[in-house]
Amino acid sequence: MDYQNGVVSRVPEADALLTRVAAAIATVRAREGHVGYVRVAFDEADYAAFPPTSRMAAIVSAAGRAYDTDSPATAVHDRVAPRPGEIVVRKTRVGAFSTTDLDAQLRDRGIATLILTGISTSGVVLSTLRDASDRDYQIIVLADGCADLDPEVHDVLMRKVFPRQAHVATVAELPGLLRQHR
Image (tube, rainbow, N blue to C red):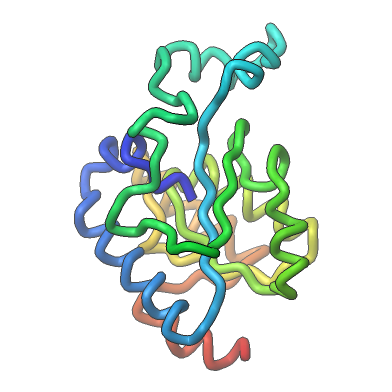
């Protein structure tokens, strides 16, 4: 989630992160699993719809037009890009579900288990995990497939918060986990 050019460029260890996430995607595809993408981007109607109290509006406004739907900064990074037919949703809030049809697309495909990766751990990953849990999905979070600008926050979420609602694992552990969830 949010593996967009403009977001990836802010991650200090982006190259290693992209390598791990690309490996996770390859593992899922090799087992004929579904891969889905969530990206944040805004059109004119989205900008106009922000209420004056929105913290998101302040963040988006400070970025100028970097988050426009057709901006290269909002495109999914080439190293982890979607293939034709894969789920791709555009969100206008932090979590992956609240402003998208992601839940409907997942349910239409019979998907009950989600494997989450994303930038940032304290943003999209946390919000999506909480919402997915409320929607009764089984959840796996790949700790080394996520990044946060604050490594300490990332660590606390992975060690203390996420295990309450998800199985926290690594990309290297993914093949074994997929065998268990068949």
